[in-house]
Length: 65
Image 1: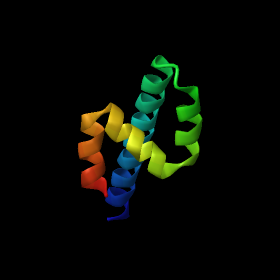
Image 2 (image 1 turned 135 degrees about the horizontal axis):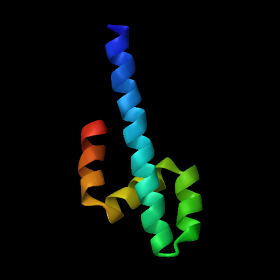
Image 3 (image 1 turned 90 degrees about the vertical axis):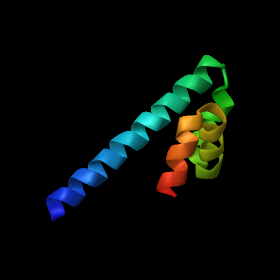
């Protein structure tokens, strides 16, 4: 049972890292350096940016939250 939970948790961590990397890339492509800094420190602002920049991320956030 623990192995299954560990795998699920690991997949969640990977998915979160991939979402953050995509967010950073999109912000940098738009030269939004200050937004990258703030998103790295402020979870609420990061979620707002994810919703703003990626409709799929918005759907994922609804499922996860």
